[in-house]
Length: 354
Image 1 (cartoon, one colour):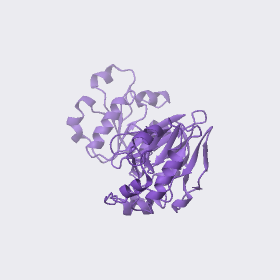
Image 2 (cartoon, one colour):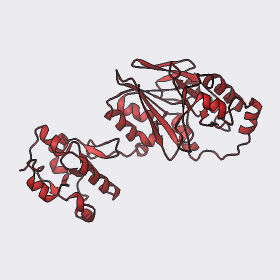
Image 3 (cartoon, rainbow, N blue to C red):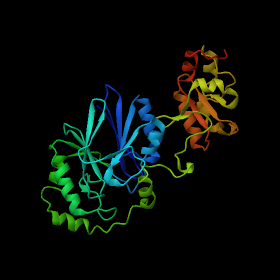
Image 4 (spheres, helix red, strand yellow):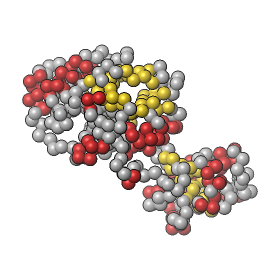
């Protein structure tokens, strides 16, 4: 099984990508709206077929990226029936099975943080994804969104901490840089839900947290009850509209050479090789390209115009990726790296100037 853990630093949210390596079928758990392009890039680069986005509950501190993934890849949205969410394709109840290739996850109802909390468990109990029901050395809050400490205590004890001891547990959030734990660890060391804690102690603790509500609750909950579907186009994560530009998992805007060739008059192409390198190279140059070497690029940014989108190129796309990033950080909104560089351009038979 392919497994990736992804983090949204501003909200401390953990997202999880799981895939059957034989079929490339995948699921994405607890995606984040603002991280849509990052997650989409990873799925594309790993050549996976995303079948489902799974949410552990209706989140109060971030907006899910489930609807965006459905729009981009055709994946199905799955969430608990008890969540009351709309725009989903599957409403899951306790014991539901989500199959992806030769793998599957069991949805276990673990209410208490919200009524619609689910924990997703692999059949061999090697891994479980607990959302906000059980956190590392902690537990999800019970003071809003139909939370109930009695219910949460029972859910965690019966559905999560009853799993085999070496089962790795992956929470929906962590704010201290921790990534995973195990059932045995939490039973021994969780100060709220460990074996030594009585239900009345847990309830008393949770009822006296005195924490403010999450900053984004008024925005996040309504959006998540729509499975992340925006109410208008202005709330979409920013994707360039000047061409078929894709954000790579490395964080670089990238464009295909075929499109650049067909639209050369609509873009400015900048070659970032050194002049001497270009003269000595048999590769040639892209027709109409200007030369601004990467070594002096920062000092010559003023030479570039915003009149047309800027496409950066080098032999294989490494140096030009740096150039595109430099310009983006300087406020140029229409920039891209040429995928594969001059080598890819030549390999597909596109013309060069020698």
